[in-house]
Amino acid sequence: MFDFISGEIKKGSKPNEFWTCCPFCEERKGSPDTNFHLGFNTKKAMWHCFRCEASPRNVKTNIENLKDTARLYETPSTVTQLRSRIERAATRKTPDYIDLDLISWELTKEHTPLAYDYMINRNFSPDEIKKYNLRVGKTFIDPKTKRNVKRWRERILFPFFDGDNCIFVCGRSYMGRDPKYINSSGSKKSVVYGLERVNGEKECIIAEGIISAIAAERATGIPAVCLLGKSNSDWALSKIRSKANRVYLSLDGGVNRERRELRRRLLGLGFEVFEVLLPEGKDPDDLGSEYRQCFDQRKKVSIG
Image 1 (cartoon, helix red, strand yellow):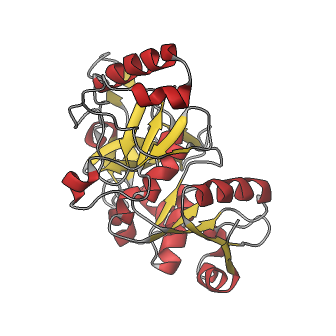
Image 2 (image 1 turned 45 degrees about the vertical axis):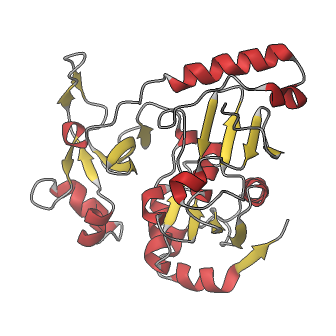
């Protein structure tokens, strides 16, 4: 019988969230999980190991044996509901990936000169445009509705990847269109920009915006990610935890309350946290080449 919550359990920072050591890591990674990498949410019917990537989609499970959940969730009815939720989660369809060639052009001087010059003026080099796979949105025909879609035109597109697949897109206007930023469908709280570049690394910078993350990475050489705002799920933070042990928290200068809250949650997930204190109202992109000096001189370790 499979009972993935029979061992020691730690309560998460939100209701219905728990963490336990993954029983699949030894087989899938070659060594047992000793640091509570399997996240479990009873309300959302989700479970996932952020070390070996085990989930209902790639692991066949028998969840009939849930007797130990009674000591956690108190009532037999909750166990019955839990069983039903996990079974539904196991049959969920994989979300559709985004076809970048359908919705955008490559960002090049020959084909998209206005967008190209805009990004060059924002201190992006031709190599960085390729490295970050920046695109230019275009009008296209939706294959499902057969209608013209114009929402991405005149926008620089920043793709989010899971492996080789694009799972999310953020578009920034470069011709004065409102709003300045738009996103593809799906919750932005569950995605992390730049996460694929942290693969194999032990540290990363967490910035507040996409361009700030790229500017921080450019100045330091350390992979940088962006959480798309200050309110993000522990699920997204745990994705970072699966790839890095140390983070440098580099939010815009002056956002002290948000920085303290994010620091608390990062420490709760077992990160070694350093804070990079920026001048009031400044972000890594504003500082440019001076960010490296600020990073070296003004970072401090957080212990609680």
